[in-house]
Image (cartoon, rainbow, N blue to C red; front, top):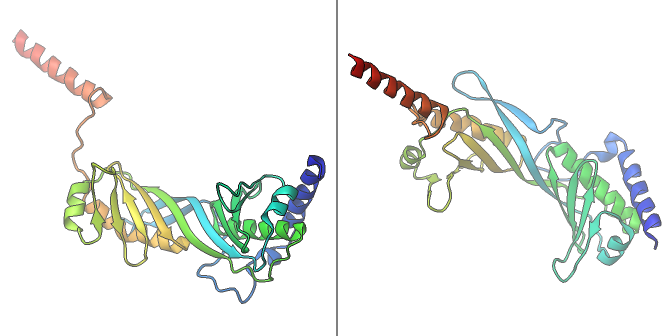
Length: 261
């Protein structure tokens, strides 16, 4: 097959998938899911639980799985579809990419599919449906229910103040571990919701392991009072910074004034 016809078939498949109605893009009835699809963007606004203010969580990546329910000839898929990679000696799955929504899928010959690279559950469901439609266009008809499930969400946040990680790990040793020689962040494992937070001294937080937006938002709301408790009150100026230069200048001025007296 020529590259022109291959490109034409793939583009038509993507256009047809894009033109599907919202009802067709929704998760089919009867599919067991642990979340609801959301049209929200990649930023979640959550209450801090202390001051009445809000914190912003930016979704960086969502990983989801789907089961097409049909065995797939991966070589045929790789030959007929554009934006695909297939090297069975290195990895036993076809790597397929979408432009809209921007997503990547790992498609196995068993019919299992992993979707990653999206930043909202709605886009994850939309991408899974598009990938399934492209596979159907190649000649492998999936089941009506593709058993779509979000497996992991990764979000980042900034609490806005530096944190004493040594004090935090000492007070919460049952849930936290901190080995600065191996990794600069403190690892905090929450039980409910079951998520893992990577906390850095700068106040940056990475939240992973959630399967719903509510998991990562409630995790940050619960942990924020703890982080506030271990806020660094006095921060030493970094050598060479503006604060350090200003301090040295004031010391020099004081010394000169004392000498004049």
